[in-house]
Image 1: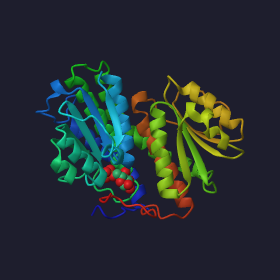
Image 2: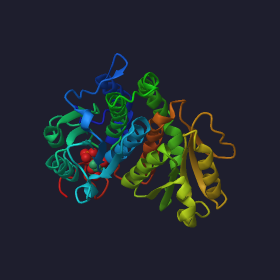
Image 3: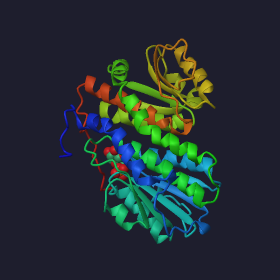
Image 4: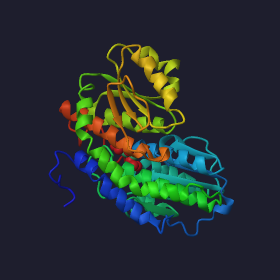
Length: 361
Ligand code: G6P
């Protein structure tokens, strides 16, 4: 029965370890003959002139990723709005809008309200969810399912990474529907197919992350930094750490450090930094060095080719396309959060004050 821990200490750990399998299943459902095939027949893209992603929590972070990809590949305005803001904001949604809702449970009250509002405004609606027949799935024009299986731990892990791979497939598909074919399509699909192995390699680094986690167990705060896609990964990493370990964590765009957060960095402050994006990694390294100069201890997640000389706590992700490096990086950040929580004796699967699915506003 899926509601068993299968030999793992916690559901969260079990679900982290299921990621290679559920990512493979999700790819199998949405890639066929080397084509990204999310089923969208009937979707009329000819009149769509803007796209909104709408979601909450971890699903919102997945949506930010999809926004980033789509903005890279198609030439339309692409927005990503938290559902709790969307429903009260004056967003110009109309019949020329495609609204994409992302939700593990398919039942989140704010996301559901946002969907209803979009439908009232005649937008075309598409839901990405993990739960068959959920409210969002039933009410949307189109539905795509992640194949994560039941996720029991409150903190989302496998649902998130399956959302990332499915959204990557969806973005490839939308890019081809909008006739702006992605030049690197075959390469991206081949890279996506590597993800189960890549995630497996990250899970094998668990002990190293458990060691790094000890730096955080007596800390009140942690600072996550990154640029571009690395910034989106650190948003999720900081959320995970807060949720399960109660260490206050904030994520900053590395370039914003100097505009405020650097004032908080002092001796032994822990900074978790990502430098996986070749176009900006060196800039991030400069920002990290500014924190080191103030006595910070830095956990650095870097690409294979990144020079990390002088850094003590370094972990590398495998060689993958930079547009996908958030997947292995996220797995490392999940492990970090998990081991800080374990070390502190927290109830990892059921963090205080949180619910798996928030069905009231
Ligand atoms: C709750 C959960 C989060 C989740 C969010 C959105 O806050 O604790 O883990 O990300 O709801 O849930 P959904 O089911 O819409 O993805």
